Amino acid sequence: QWKELLLQLSPIEPREWNTKPLWSKLYDMFTLPIHLVLVLTIPVVDPENRLANWCRLLNAFQCVTSPILALLLFRGFFLRLGGLVPLWTIALVLGSILATAVLATSVAHEPPSYHCAFAYAGFVVSVVWIYGIATEIVALLKTFGVFYGISDMLLGMTVLAWGNNIGDLVTNLSLSKQGFPQMAMAACFAGPVLALLLGIGVAFSINFTTWGLQMIKLPYSNFLLVIYFVLVAMMLLLLFSLVLTRFRSSRAVGIMLIVLYVTFLITTFLIEFTYFPVVVKLFSPFFR
Image 1 (spheres, helix red, strand yellow):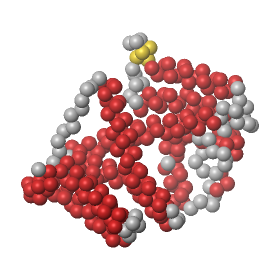
Image 2 (cartoon, rainbow, N blue to C red; image 1 turned 90 degrees about the vertical axis):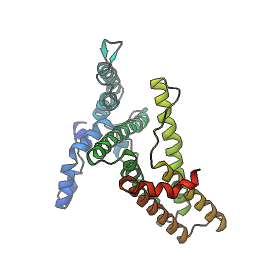
Image 3 (cartoon, one colour; image 1 turned 120 degrees about the horizontal axis):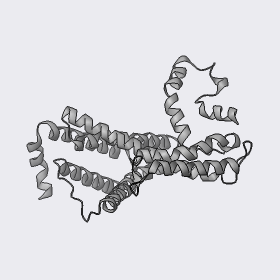
Image 4 (cartoon, helix red, strand yellow; image 1 turned 30 degrees about the vertical axis):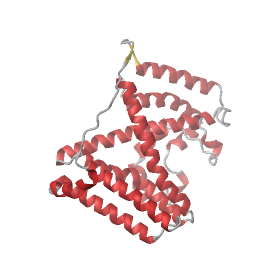
């Protein structure tokens, strides 16, 4: 089982190391610390791997590291329960008890009956990791904006928006090339709907519950006029174009959407840096 643990911790297969090119070896060495941290904290259940990726020692160790990771990323590591007991000691004790139970009720050569529970735990820990990484990215963007004098709104509409949607863009393009355009089109609409409804809804609910607020005041920004105008224009363009073409997309619609987005980017940069009064006069008739 120690050999299985080393194989799980290694980012490469020992037999493939000699046949890999130099740049691939350097990449594996550079990403080794990240790989180790992820492997030691995120349980993975893969039916295609040997023993469905079951490793008795590693899964028991993950029972201890996952709760501590959650406390660290949610900034509750140094909090005290009742002002006396640190939360990290409670997480350590409970995780140790769970790890002991896993070691006592399982064997190394066969996954236990409850192995599927590690898949759900891996999903939860992955969400925790995404939350922690997203929090650090937002902090870096704010630092970048303060350093260069760029507003949070512009950073959110450009850098953060590109980072959030580049994965969806690649996936949807891949689906279209594989012959699933309807699935890709549905994902283009379902992704923003999910982000708006769940993202805003969950964030506001957490703030209401945590801080006991009755209302959240959103600060007015100079970009709101442009954002609302572009959003409404995009929805109207898609609505009328799909109705006129009997819900068949075309190259012309794609070109118009790209032109609309480029115009939106140019307008936001003009507002941010120099020509805000001119742009406000341009869009103000739509919001009277």
